[in-house]
Length: 369
Length: 122
Image 1 (cartoon, rainbow over the protein chains, first blue to last red):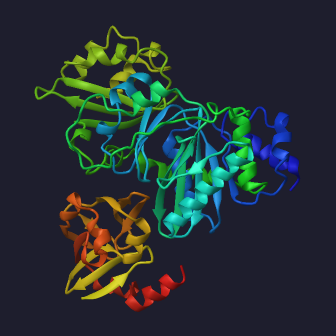
Image 2 (cartoon, each protein chain N blue to C red):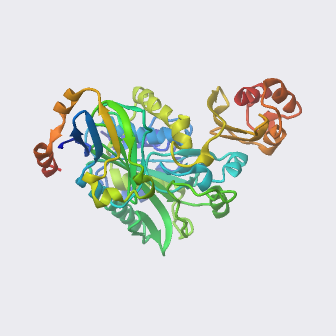
Image 3 (cartoon, helix red, strand yellow):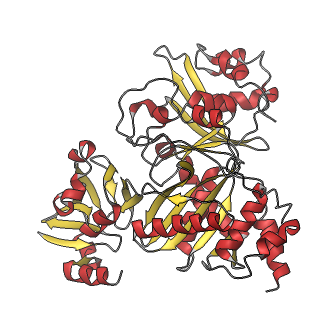
């Protein structure tokens, strides 16, 4: 395969969308590492598509683990603002769900273990899929690779026993592990840049919750590649990571593959999974629905009712675009009787399209009831 | 009690028509300190080769697969308070107790000898 062809593929496939604008301009950075990677992993190239909701990428990992031959696979991806809970976490205890709903931050759950993390377009998610059952060895192989990769661009990072990568004692990458029969998935964050207040706010509960049995997140000092003076742009860094880890090896994910991946994705929106089966009473919404509204986005809606069947609170999470103040549509719902007529009256004066791009008043009503 | 294994490292100890399902010593060692076990409810049905729960440790989360089909007639409540029991004695710490609906499913599982051989290949 000609190098040009590989470049073209990476250009369209790497982070879905937007394409890596600076790829050609920065060939010198990439070419320093030659054509072959010492790690020789296979890069999973997704067809161009705007950033999807996070569970899609987790489903890519699972699909690869279950369907592709035993090899080492890698891909890098980015998501719009999202909080990802660990598999067995009490979501209401670990996440400020109201804040996320107001700020348009998606909230989802992964199948790997560990604590809640916040990710957005300034953060890379890296996924590594490899055969085997050996957890510690796989983890340390992965964190060592990534530490060496950073070392190659002059950033000294160290792997810790908790599977994080630290720069000067602060966390730049956190990783989690999901084990399937005979396959290991390691995935994690790599902070290129971040907004500390937004991150901390999103993954801190709004008020003290009751004791829960779930897995509790660990707080840590955090840093980013930008904070330690990386000279590449985020796109250059992504292209470099792929080149360093995979060389020119590419496995394209086809449209047919995507159809299977989207089937896997559905189980991530199952209320039993996303709310957590046993991980705390506080997660039980009285009404919980997952809906897609064409041209607007996907919605997870949680509604809590007072004993008299009036609304105590409503949360909306998903991949829709928030363009205004979510309180404008959520606050008028509080205390309203949970029936179509009362809800319709309550939102009469609201203008949902000014808050969520493309959302009509009727759409809003359908989300609620 | 006779013991059988899945390649994904769950075991089932069989006492008549009742099976006690847990994870093998190898799995417990790989996982390290167990922090949480996600279990089905009593009365749920499990299916051979299908997921019935998950186990999470300081290092990883791993799905749990059932070696047989049947109804869950007991879950190990001790694990809610002390999931590390699995690390202390994996073979004595069953996770769920199942009323085996089709004993012939046991024939496709590995016995101790076959499992030991399998471990040697990993």
